[in-house]
Image (cartoon, rainbow, N blue to C red):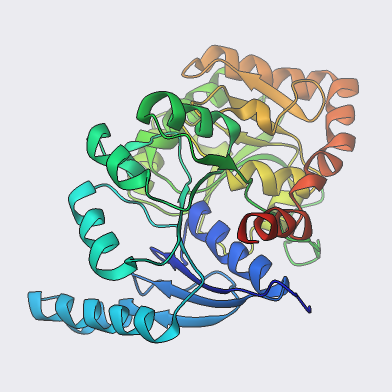
Length: 363
């Protein structure tokens, strides 16, 4: 695409593997590239699984070869040389940023005078801004712009860190063409689905299992599928086995193309304590599948309109979550209405529309 305002952009990410934030970063590179910008994608870790567009600089390969002090110096110098030679119009930093001291050094010795846009992808702000609010305000007040992936997060940044230069640009969703023949299931098999990183401290998947057991779904032969990978996989498998519904709870491996599995689900489930703008919700709705979510910190109401495309339930309440699942099983009118509205409810998150918002910011 021809773009009269074409910019040279350096997009910095932690990795491109096994996470919603990482998938969103890859999609952002695609959106910017398709808008006509010159995109260089720099990844800190050597995890490349999701699609991207632009030139890739994989610092993770150097890290894998040599992660000693001298190896870090080598990566630092290579990155600094890249930034110095390319003279980017903008740096977009999509990494997690826990240490203000380290980020001050990066800003002073690497980014220097290049305008920097910092993305905040979680309601757990310390992951992106650190815990020292005074130092964070001093550092990030110099940014060209802060971009939060939800309005709730943007307001939280203003209130808790005193940073005013914050805008909201949602995560995009790609056009999903699901070939339902790819994922084969028994004709009479029905299931509900959680998909995402298996980190129980964030996703509270053990509560989801408890809620499923309390619901009427096992008696109705509606299985619970849990798809993904993460540090708590074995813990969750053991937790499921301890219930009297273990045979109805199935674990599927991480799949970089989850859409065939998602599209077959009756509905998808999210029980997180906090989120940014969760890809599992966006992608489920884009597949035409309604969502039941907890009222996580970060604002599910920006994606889910209760009774229109899904349901929102009080966080950490297994009984209430079980009741919500029962509602979708027994109230066919409600369920069918939510399913028919799902896809259109995220039309505003298309790659083209989100790219337009980034174009305005980069003008």
